[in-house]
Length: 180
Length: 172
Image (cartoon, rainbow over all chains, first blue to last red; front, side, top):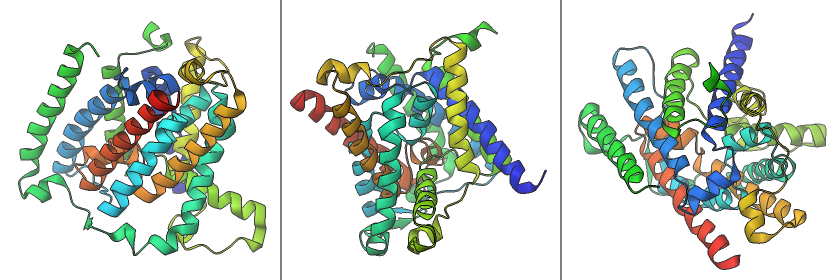
């Protein structure tokens, strides 16, 4: 097998595992996602925060050991805050995100397959249309490059990681204690 | 192994699973979990397919080439993985209108399809604008402690919560 097809095969295998987990978590369901946005069902936040704590501890340790490298996305306020809010509007209206819509389709959800998918592709294409006009303008407003929180606070990464893992765990504990 | 056949798992188990999966994808494929770029590649492929050689030479598709890559296969894998989970837990079902939606807005098929289409357009556009989605920024980027990803993830939820309350609190 060539290097390229091996890479694609790994992507496929990881996707199957990811889709399986997303479905088991219930987040391929519109009701669960919109329930989170309406603050009645905290499944989405529980999954994300647990994944972030687990992931953060593991990948920083593994990078420290020289096993892997990071790929931090550069950003700006114009890019991430504006894009994030536009994304949020779509998130609530569609009730799936780009990953969970794939899982929703696998679970038999037809609104996702028939029009949600078409919408995401159309929206991505519309962005390709406007990209030349926004590329060096608003997308660069408040640019901070590939900044990370440890670099921002100018401290050793573990000074951020350990308290952060504790803080996110506390948030999970409080959500659970509030019965949400 | 009966737990494999249950339809729902604890969100903490699922979260730990996704966290570990993100170590493994970085270790083996040197790639973080992410999904939304695939839809842009798909858009580029479709434009090529529909317009052939007349397809415009767009700057964006030079940066995001319209081809099947690792992440594209990941997204296809998600469909299969969710399908396997649904089938083996006896929870596979075709559904056109989600329950929460029909409780608030009724059984009109067209209304739901139009809302999903418009929602999808905002989602796809916003994901490209922010350069990532709930997986790429929300999970993979935040765990790398990237500032871009924390801002994006927080804004996904601010925008989403405001829109959901507008839809279900005011419109419905």
